[in-house]
Image 1 (cartoon, rainbow, N blue to C red):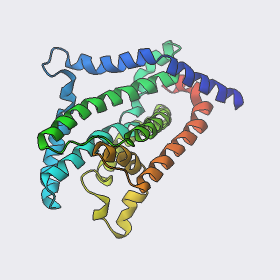
Image 2: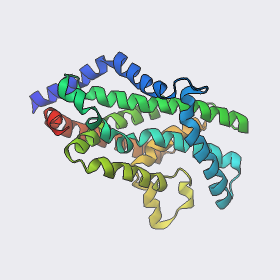
Image 3: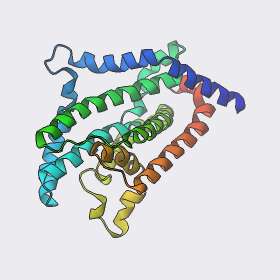
Length: 263
């Protein structure tokens, strides 16, 4: 196992060494789609803005919240959720979708994970620009809290480790490719994006306490709104990240060499 572990870390190192390639490829994959349009890749944020405004109007009315309160919370939640849910939504295609390259070229397997995660981060940045434009329009703009930095570190670590694991399982068991995106839609409702944890009581609080995405959501969303995330969010985010590291250390070294046969 020590030899397999060494090869796994060598794969990780080689993948990081190709950062200039996967950063360029990630940006090109986004920009090429919107070539010759006026707003360019900012069109990515269109669905996020439309969903946020409509949800803020509806749920703000249901829960008696002012639009200036509901819209920042929901919009920051949606743009953050779109990134942290990556291991469930898009990561299952990371290896299967690049099967031709994996079979015919000796790229490190982590390269495909880094490229996919980087693409998700670029989309997050596009949405973030539109988010602050909307906040300025509402007069609710806030300086990000400094805890956004450790929050993003936890999110990226979790995304990379869990994405590697889900991509491997999706390559080995093809039904996983369809099951995990379904779970991402399920967690969209179960995670406090359109509602707040304080609105729940009793056994329903388990949706917060045992939701692995809740911590990662709050350690990014709350700093974007200029607030300190609650301690519970840091604990849940840390647990999710540590479990991701453990899963990566268990599954990637043991099965890395099987990936070309699975895809």
